[in-house]
Amino acid sequence: MEKKEYTSVNHIVKYIGIFGGVEILKTLANLSRGKITAYFLGPLGVGLIAIYQNILELIRSCTNIGLETAGIQQLSEISAEKRYEEAATMSKVIRTWSMAIALLGTMACIVLAPLLERLYFSETHSGYIAIMMLAPAAFFAPIAAGECSILKGTHKLKRVAVVELLGAVGTVICTLPIYWIMGVSGIIPALVLCITIEALVHLFFCIQVMPYRIDMFSADVWKSGIPLLKFGIPYALTAIMGAVTTTILYKIIDTTSDVAYYKTGYALIMYYVSIAFSSNSSDYFPRLAGICHDKEMKTAAVNNQIHTSFILTTPMVMAFLLAIPLIVVVLFTDEFMPIVSMCVMAGLFQLLRSVTLPMEYVSLAHGHSWMFLLLEGLYNIMTIAATFFLYDRLGMAGIGIALSMVGVANTAILAMVNRIFYNISISRRNWMTIAAGAGIVICIIVLCNQEDTALRFGAGIPLTLLAAAYSYLTLRKSIKE
Image (cartoon, one colour):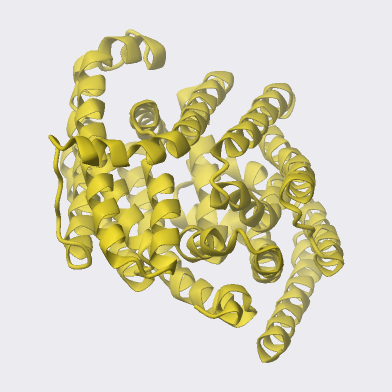
């Protein structure tokens, strides 16, 4: 790939368009599933789903060695140099280790079920048998992750887009009849079926790129996975920290209903702006891993990714904040209105993710997973501390403020680390754009907290339209250049 294809705004916009379009459809599918869940199960059912998903994530984090990220990083370098035989060998290594991790995760789910029951549930909830029933999901999740890393590492991005879309649509189709017929008792079967469908779709499309081969009894295959292990262990520890952080946050939040509000609000925040970020892991990270040793190219890639993502995100966040009460009523039920204050106060967090995500991938692209572990650990500590102090005083709005405060601090920390350790400076143009965007989003947050509806929309809609026009003109100019 030529230099301009690695760093150009045109390339970035193209793949944001591809994955953004898929993300829109995925978001609609996920929100449809959220609507179905809220309608049939209510806040208690949504809270139970959040807890079961956290259990699966904790098991996966404890057994996974960061294989997906390590595989993408290794395969990206090999594919960039067109070493096809090595890519096939590495794919076999990834699949063999994925199968071992899948078996380990299944055993962990069964053996640790009594401990997990005591950690997550009171005596009034289902026992450890329910957790043991999650074992098939614990098996198929690493299989899907391994196949996904092969597709992304070999730059089969259109296949990745199709797989993600089919997986999202398939889960909605399967979730509806299960919740309709079984209610709350269908939560575990639905989770297992959704993850199984995801794994099968990944396998179907990836086998066409790399024929499925594993060798559980080859010493060479296990030795070839040691570099993945060295890279992946810190990343796996990061995932464990993330799962533990979520568990602690659930403990800080008082009730299962509030856990449901937090999970739903956080999902809304992440789903909505993910349209602009969807290409980061699929396109940007593999590109960055292939050029991380070229200072000029990687600096241009990071700055252009930040600039493009931020310009696209700003009007989207503004529109989201103005429309969030209507979004909650349409997508969920009136019972979920407490999440409005959380989403509004987290507006700055939404906006700054377009800045922090491109910077977070820098350490991973260099293979410095220990640095990534340190940064994520600091982020998790800040999130827990801010939520602990603000939720007790301000409720759901306090969680939103905590997220925004942590987002600002994380932006400053990542910029400093990238400048000191990786010699990547965020351009003056980007800092000016970030300051202007943050200022206008803060204005929208203030307007959204006004009781006067005419003032809120009379001032908010024109500001949003002006921001959208500026974004369009800026990106058009950048593409022409």
